[in-house]
Image 1 (tube, rainbow, N blue to C red):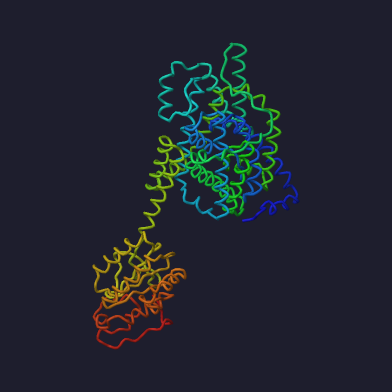
Image 2: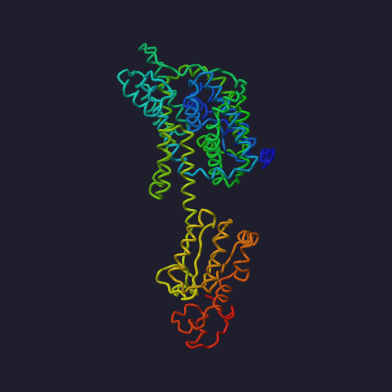
Length: 591
């Protein structure tokens, strides 16, 4: 982590064309975020101008203190709908109390994100699986569409209703719908779809809003039809603000703070890593935590609600040729200037037109490609996706995220607690009789080899112990057990005790336990806990050659003389009678 990470990329601006590329990308970003900011503020239940405020100062701070060269922070669909869901039960959306709660939540989220970054907890975002994100965003998209239907049809329905309540209210009041609002909505929707297809260089939101506003103006002038509009936006820079840090407010917001922080960080880090994979840049997850934390912490004092990485604006920033974070900084600066010029025009923007734009936004965030992939590939991940999607529609959004994370952890722990325990034996069909797994392979009657693929921790001990017990009961004559431990990356006290217990059991059977290719950290745990004394230092081997030669030397030669399997090279040196055993050197060949 760096205190001033911008000092690392600032010298790059001296190179030819870098500053100019960032300048053009910054202008593009400012234009793109203008309609998005208003749309996202509407989703969040905030006054429209707050969506623009969230794209100004937070974008600048995140670019200065993050590690990604292309990530652009600001308001997003997911963060906006989580904010609305978290706060609508506490205050009327759009009210002064709602704004106060939103700014306080933003400050607390920033503090938590900053603490997590300084504590190097960037790894935590890895526990929110891709299925959780896909399921949540799909559910959030459906919620956006449901909540905007009232504006599309011009219905007077209370805000803050649950998903099913919203649908029932719209169906019950549909006869009171305004045909003018519906017409404006349909035309705006069509303009957005066609503009996205035929005018790709112009942001489809701008095309849709211009057409929708024009039609609403014509209906008002020619037909005298009055439609509800978004209203005027202050043509000013973000006003100073302060969070409410009273005990009661913090207590009410605490559950939402954790969920919003984790989800926002996951969104930001995932986007930055995705773009870094294309550009070849290395991303510091902890530094991104710090950048996101500072952007929200500072933004809360400049009337910005929760900001995080935006996939759309970050992608546009990358495609526009941005070379350094200066592009995101300039986008925030240019947006301040543009707002002063165009803010008065928003009084002509009809709510029905904005609803149609939000329909397009919602549809665009549903990841149909990955939904199909997940449903076709993994039953467990499909369950996580469906559960998160359903919870997003039926529960509070912060709990939906937590439920998805919990299910992901349960599935992971279930898989981790069932490591593969594979019986291995030489395979004559492979070069040099390499080890393989299969029921057709012949084993030594005195010597069992197994490979454990996974960590030996408290959650996996019972499963592995049961597998070893079954192996011992089915083949009691195989008194010697070699565990191929190369894939055991971690072991705790419970796992160490399991190995020590198995060593004692094998010794009581007249054999021994042997370990091959033990990792240093695993060996250290066995040694420091005294478990290596029971297993025996001499029973740990670095190579398969060493382990098989040593174990073979301890086998009962009378059984070897009568054995017709002869699967090891050493077996060829044991005659059918009781002839003395001649130890084969490693240079004479190895299975």
